[in-house]
Image 1 (tube, each protein chain N blue to C red):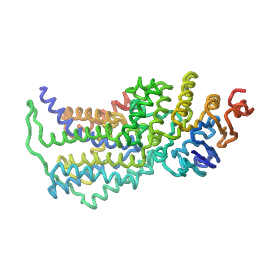
Image 2: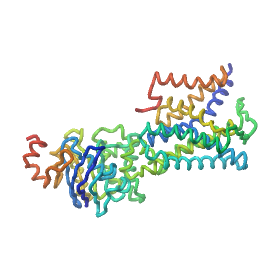
Image 3: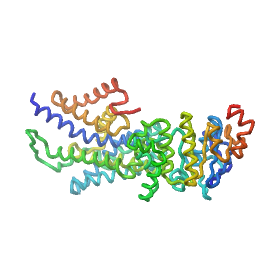
Image 4: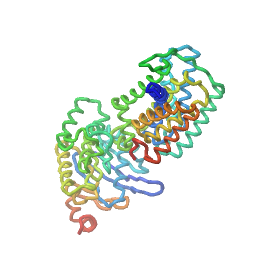
Length: 235
Length: 286
């Protein structure tokens, strides 16, 4: 479904992503874990078109989207919930969700998606008229995921959904990601510094360090890897 | 001093201020979408003035049709300017500052070449006065002010209710996030620049019969617009309206006590006062 081949991203002369290859199959949850500054977010920004890759290919649903701009990539069914939530702070919860459906013209289906998202996130339903900027961290993350679902995607890209959240909320987010994947058959590419959470949710995972993939395999195997244990799971 | 006189003075001030609010709203819209300040904004106002001179004063087109034509023409000129000059400068405030200053000189010199250096008078479309509750209001001023208010409300509704308006608000709040929702940022930037210039063009058309039309006519309204924006808060559309009301009030009342040249100082005093107390402006967020 998604295939990154030898992807490279440069900022000036500095390589942030230095030849990364990642695949995600239909309906699969795949994680990329790694430390801060490893190039995980740059990888995601390149695949959704926010930065232009300096090399390599991004193929999504059989189409080479390496040179596409973001708005066309969303329309093809790839939805990216970015790092740091990036909501529209001066818009209400509902307005944020409706922005997620910006490319869609099917009014009735949009209303159905909206009802579905509000059912999945009862907290958002309670706060539907509130400005996004006034929500708590966990609610903002839920709104980010909900907004990403509003484009009716076939693949969801989540960048650090657990960042800065209390353990209880992280568990809630994890359950939500699993249920979205199960109910809607949406493939998920999950980028996390929280390796414990990521390896619990994902079927397969990649370990990214200084712009390269250094390890990959089934999540269960990575959980047992001495390197992953020592560096990411606290021994 | 009677209340009537005070109210009269305030009305006089608000009248023109509403037109300057249009200029300020255009600047603010462009700033919030492209994160640049277009110093050639007054030159788009000037273009609106010349469209009005040629279409209305020379060709004899209907006043309101002329206003629509000025808005449309200048809006298109704005889209062209964005595509040709500003589209690579989104977020690059310093580059855009230099480039837009260059554009200002090019457009002013171009206007001198094309239209001549002399002032061109535009006759008033409306004459006479109306008396309401003892107040005397010139019909021309009334039409100008009401037209400006209609345009402000139209902008508000456009941003609030239309799909491109929604996209503009989203881009202003977070451009990357908007792109990830499927908003075509380049198209929105071009349209936003065009709408911003169209507002300036409309303002130029409205004030063409009040002042004369000349290549340098853009300087005054832009100075007023900057006062309004700084007082109201950079990037805030409600702030621009509030700043305009304040400027109008201050200038209107000031005109009771001093000459019209001296009144211009009041705006700057107001800017200094606001910056001392609240540097981000009255409604400004960050």
